Length: 386
Ligand SMILES: Cc1cc2nc3c(=O)[nH]c(=O)nc-3n(C[C@H](O)[C@H](O)[C@H](O)COP(=O)(O)OP(=O)(O)OC[C@H]3O[C@@H](n4cnc5c(N)ncnc54)[C@H](O)[C@@H]3O)c2cc1C
Image (cartoon, rainbow, N blue to C red; front, top):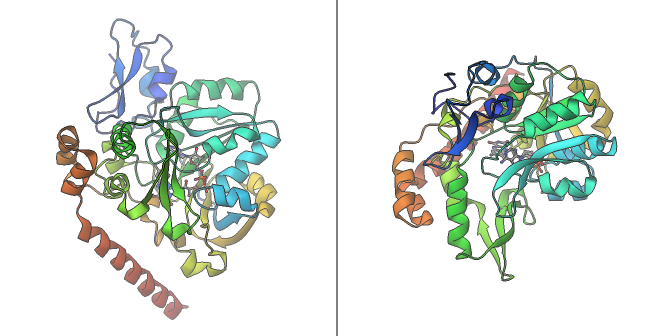
């Protein structure tokens, strides 16, 4: 019987599921709504492939840290319709134009999130935009392996643990694969997303939604929900019960509290995220639709990025600069004392009530004030030593 990662360490990446060729592994939701592998002893032949593919048991080697940028897409439509600076969509569009395939997270008809593969620019909008819900990988890794073996170019985008899962599953590098991971806060439970949607829609179908409507600027984003009766429901980001639970780690996966896939050096080719501290280090880049942070990790990513650099408004920066106001680049999700009661309460209470009961408001406000003061102090110190 194989010994996979302990339940609290398993990140649900599906590498074991994809590698098993006897169908002995099923992914099943636990009582918090997170998918975990379950092994059927009758079908398991003890080949050990699943243990080898697990990125928790066998973490893939990191690429050496190369260089960092702050950037946003020159293409205004891409910039406006992306969560941040539109780096993903620019790279994805170029991959598709060159006959390649792009894999990323998309909504299912019932507004859950899963990874899909696209080969047309018309479908790019399905992958754009952050969906703050753990995405289901399904059998995507094995489909990617098939494409790579046919010499097709593939751009894979996902959370750091999903990229680690893919790299581990593949077991070797492919010249025709580029992996792009996110600076990641942690992944919330799909069940909490389902409960939140049910509450705000009053049981009506949600036909469309966005986590970051940037029309009032990146610092005033709203979550928008389009209901089947034509109603549009809008929540301010900081007032949304779903975002409150996410931001305070009430709803994130247990493995996120000890995430192994953080840091400036990663097994991915490229890391992207929000460059909040551009205001400190690259103020010319700052504008209403957001600026992205980019870190190139592999030799392979350098010529690719060089080729497409002219599609961005771009400046050099460093990983340290990016991390000033984005500590999630290095730190796993901070532990959360009310998490257990929160998951108990969502079974008993309306979702927003369970959040209100367990959310600790003043701490978050204090952290953001402390962060701003800390940023100013660092800036003064750096000016002083220069
Ligand atoms: C769960 C989660 C947590 C995040 N936490 C942080 C953070 O703490 N700090 C930070 O700087 N940035 C974070 N991000 C990333 C950020 O929201 C932007 O996606 C990123 O800045 C890239 O912006 P973009 O404009 O280039 O691309 P976007 O238009 O945002 O493109 C989104 C890309 O992310 C992928 N994606 C979207 N949702 C998911 C998902 N659920 N699972 C896997 N991949 C997904 C899509 O496939 C697509 O490739 C997080 C994203 C997610 C999904």
